Length: 254
Ligand code: G
Ligand code: G
Ligand code: MN
Ligand code: NA
Image 1 (spheres, rainbow, N blue to C red):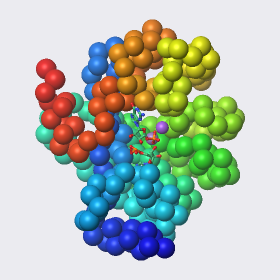
Image 2 (cartoon, rainbow, N blue to C red):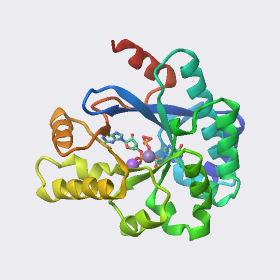
Image 3 (tube, rainbow, N blue to C red):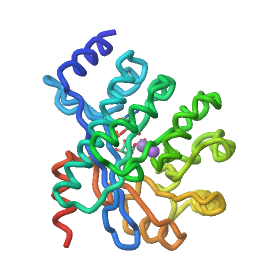
Image 4 (spheres, rainbow, N blue to C red):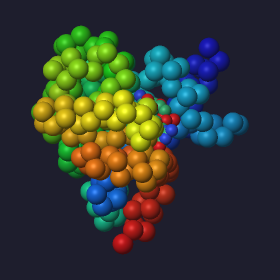
């Protein structure tokens, strides 16, 4: 209850901010995109991570408007970076289940893209298995519509739940995000390595792109490249950081 009320205030006072974690092309190390991750700039407690508030926010009546703001802010940022001469970046947002159920998702996202003249393929929407499981088939229609318009749809934390395989059939997908739990021990756990290999093979069969999450070391990077994984995300390339810091990082690389 206290957290609920505090979140109401936080939204009204614009205390929520987006940080951006780089995503790279493994072959070159080039930053080709970023995932927008929510932070709460709390006036008394400092910068709060999602673990402290994301469940409360997801259940909050304001979740949908926060979701709308996230898409709008990412499109605004994308246009700013384009105008500043940065190479085109694919920016990913995480979806609240309630936002999908709201029914206006597709129209809002398309409006934000149009307002800021952002090409649809530069926006990616990440959907988790939790959402996939809840969703009856018509609830996926907004995602289908966005996908038809060229918006990229990624399956987050792929491989961690039992809906994964059947979801490949129903979901309008562009990319699988290999969960970081499989990347962590990829050099020492033969089963994890085989799971990653299987996901890469499955993605190829289904014509999907793949990104591996949670890459922390050069050895994990090399292993994934050798296995044919083309993109990665993780502390090795950078943590989530303020937008200006990401722009500086991209500009610092010749
Ligand atoms: O870096 P990290 O602690 O930011 O993120 C933890 C989790 O919080 C992520 O895995 C993601 O599921 C969730 N999360 C972070 N930002 C957002 C957001 O903007 N929207 C939604 N729905 N979830 C988010
Ligand atoms: O939406 P999702 O759950 O995938 O959000 C990404 C989460 O993973 C965030 O909490 C982010 O801070 C975290 N993360 C990103 N890169 C790494 C990494 O290299 N190692 C670990 N342990 N966590 C990571
Ligand atoms: Mn994510
Ligand atoms: Na994830």
